[in-house]
Image (cartoon, rainbow, N blue to C red; front, top):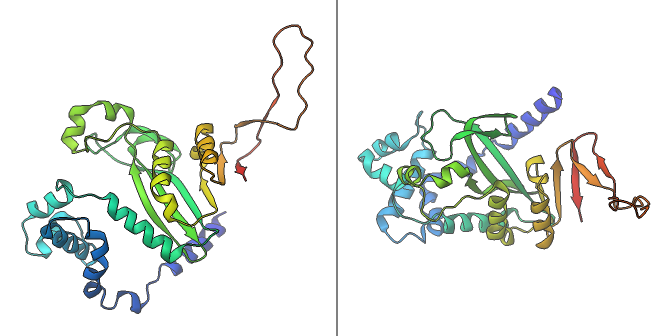
Length: 278
């Protein structure tokens, strides 16, 4: 297992190498690249801030945050902080444009859409959505945040297309807490599976694909599988090792007419398997 991990690690590092053709003149090409993403922004000032913020992220500064990026452009921290945290500009058109470009550049008929809830540890109680909850990446319940990610993979490459922050029910009901953190008023509680369904509805048609895949958390929900089938999606989802399944080919037990009619027997999987639907 360790040897396989190290081999895959070396492959990923090698894939991540950037050739000079990619980064030569990058900052000069950035404004043209951003035009499609900032087209939905009505204010010229916001478009300028977007370019400056990305230039900061692409810079060689050791620490990259709102304050250091603002100073890089000889600005007051409050101006950049307002743009990132409070300014009213739509992110959905940008994600649609990103997904469209991914579909055009990497799209293949047998491509795969991946759904993955991923948690990360976080101290404190002030960050949006933070609380003690299941963090699948660490295999435990701990204080943290969880995002549901939608990615795309084909022989041409792989990329992330969208992400939704999971907002636990306790958070969704606490209006005062939501206002304090600047959570949009239209945000409502959604399960992690419902967040995945929302992303698939909004982005799936932009990504040529033959399959939708997910881990055990996605696969354990029968409602999610039914939703995928009802939308014509083929899927390959992992399920927990203690999942029970109905053997549809087994003959039902004989009913003696006395008592309740017997149900078909269930079979328990002995180890992690995948739930395959064609």
